[in-house]
Image (cartoon, one colour):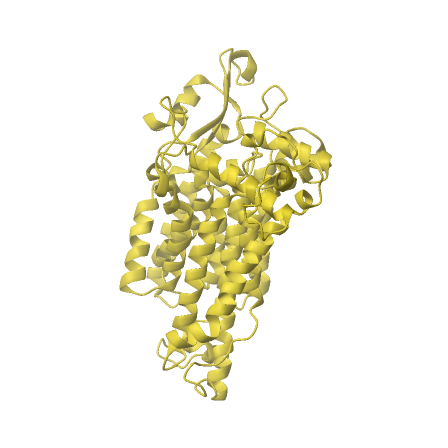
Length: 508
């Protein structure tokens, strides 16, 4: 068919809003589930190793015991030293689920992280497929995420960041489906001729996918409070998408229509629902008798000047939150910084990774020598992370010069994971905070690779050349990941190999 030929009838309704989603649903799900299975095998491989003499490593020492306590208590924490209980309970409840199955051991406290890391692969394949309208590029995104060192290690430790990443990626995917459904509803209104009956445009009905995004964002805040930045970013993005949809549908007053028809439902779905969901994650605390500050309203707030109009349990919880907020706002870099602390300007390229575990000599035997080394380091695969700034530059150019909404969406999500950390540079920060950046780096790289691959209707030579470049790059990423494998999983290696893994002085 010629490029200027009339498209098939089933594509015509989508033309005002671009191409429809791919129609190869069976192949799309087969590819996604296959890559999720591969990702799961990689994430779960020898999951219980390493351990610190049978105990958790690094910050697992906080969360694995807290999860065990939650499991013992029925879902809440009663440790009076709340200065060390500074995150909501949901992530520790999830970690505790694995401990309930396997017991208090490496498999137990890491099982849920590996499950979520596997789910993230599935989500990123489906999201990339919807963004690019290409099952092939969805598969490319899955391979990239499987081979990302940050996502890999974060899926194999009992820490919080992989849970936050999965919830915000899931919310992002829900909003993409909602965007398509809004345009499908407007297409029906256009085809039936009643889209312009009101200058404000039609009402779009209840939007379940946007509601689901709100629930997932609330669960993300139930992991870490940094999830609130995604609520702000995704809320603004969703409203902007509604404006552009109404404008494309030919409405005379798209902004007015959005504010009149869509703003209140958007605030309900992406502001109220996340807050309600967040407080629901404290269900066990509300039902407890000995939860931290459960009775603060009657014991510590003897004078009714602290929000006296609220019920006592809610006042106690807000009092607890105020103490936790004080911990976070005062957690500044000391005069002698942590040896692996890093600042956010180093994160896009992974210039200062994170050492979780290190043993040498007799404690790391297995490499065939007496001076073996075993280590786990959070490293972003350089073949990907060192392209972060070119990816961001390309995305900005496409978003501004071509008004490509896909790049704008990735920029907003990546920025929500990264830019808020610049608001308090003096705070202690570490590279594992960048875990939520990794999936959106993958999406940005995948869309760039799609430009190299070329359109499906491009000439034979152009398409095959693009496919060759794409395959070579994927091979480079996988080879880079394979080289880093020993320091991503704690295998015993020789000192020579250990030094060969540390590519930059800042990695030491």
